[in-house]
Length: 404
Image (cartoon, rainbow, N blue to C red; front, side, top):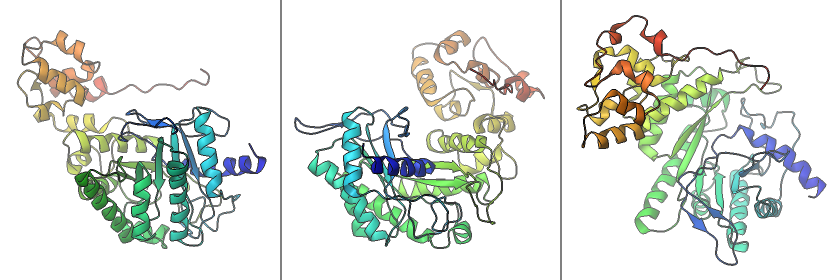
């Protein structure tokens, strides 16, 4: 590899590590023709390129880390004293093709700082995807992080070449944007999301290709004072209004020479983890934001136990439920039972009466579920009222090891 390109790669791959949205689940299966290159599968791609060559699935880079904006939380803001670099369009195309042929990657995740103006940056990103698809018949996965201030026509063009588009909401509220990223406009970001949603729906109806893996976004958590409930309420609104495939949560990470308006410490990473669990409950388990928030305290999720268990412990009057007669919606509220397990239970009980041993074969989470379930040979009516129930079923703290 050319030494100049290698130097740019070190800078721009490192600068891209703060972008969390890199899963390709949902992209249609696709294989290149005889003269083409690449393919996609139904499996998600969740890894990124690292300069030392480990665990690569996506080439995840910025086109450039030069940026006109001065967002307080961003290491690439114009006032940041970091090393800068900028790829040409052809350099990104060559890297993608060469890495794919060496079996380093399965696709490209491309984001960028904003240079000259949003339209110019968006045009260069589109040109990368277009050359890959048109000149190299590249059938692998492409995820473009679009620029919300770019022309709507350019955003539409991006959807013709990419598998997934995304726009970073950045922060959960307009007030936080005004404080930490005053050059960005929440209304513009949401308008671009709405435009993409309309095009995706139209394309599906007309059976043509436009961002077939949908759109996603990312929010930074812990850079402002928004509670977990506030973050989840914003996510819930985005899912409902724009049918996003995913909202990604990125715990704020202190950066060199930070702005004085930022907190000095990063939030606990466990907060990010709990938000993902709560997000899952909203999308697949029928929980509302109010119900998830009720499991925590003062709008913040309980960091010690997962949100589903937290809700169940505070709503013991809803349990235990009879595994042989309860509705699917109620079974989904039982800690330790996932959607697949519940579907297996519902299917199995059509043919037999389930007992505790049957459940043990269906789920590895029976220990957590026992206090909340009734079977013909198990009725934990006293267990559910125990004051020490949380201590009995919550995961025990584990001492981390220094080695191994």
